[in-house]
Length: 302
Image 1: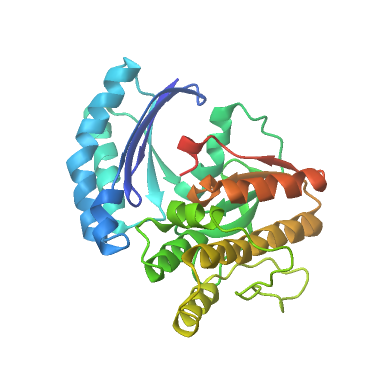
Image 2 (image 1 turned 45 degrees about the horizontal axis):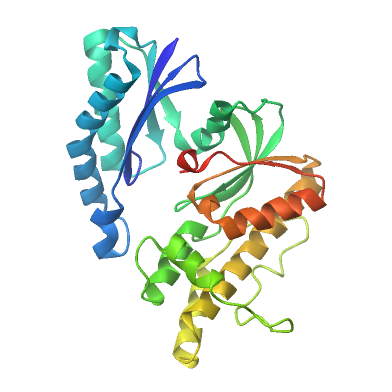
């Protein structure tokens, strides 16, 4: 069985082709980062236009690399939600065209579930239930995965997602878009003293012990206030403290999720997990607490 996946939910156009749900024959991606960089964030109209311009080329490249024909496809899976409406429509129309010509079945897909399903491509044994940690530009949440396609929300963000907070703080610090990689680099350059106190607040410390929740808008505001009051602070120190405060909350929520559910196996996904500092913190925490933590390789994180 050969399937095609079409992803156009936000700022990347992607076509993937798989055999038997696990053998990746081709994966073509066009990133729009350079198009949105001048604006410091994603502009929906620019995003949808770029999808229109690139999707045919990516489709041709994927078909050529996988050495298949359209008649060989058993299905076309396409992102249906969540995402930017105009961008989603581009992928949906491409899937519809293939269906109309070749009568190929269309499978609408929630891209939040797809973040976790990529672990199937890594050959990870699918033993359920597991906890799913999703950290991206638009989502910060922890789920209970009962099976692929069936997940229960355990804790969500009350405002900004972590990836969004990275971009906003990078803007305040006049660092390039997207902010994540640049903040990570600056943070690595800072070496705190052994007894140094945090310059940014701990997040959501007053929540009930059993509650799993994210919130990052206050951290962005704290950085803004800090920049106004203490202009002498280095960007490196601010970046280090920003990451430390944000990652403390991620680790604390995972700890609570494990305690609340008794589940000690975690699938983690989303672009924010490309941050090596975060990866190292989570792997260290998982090892100390006898928790199995699984991440897809970098090109499948996003």
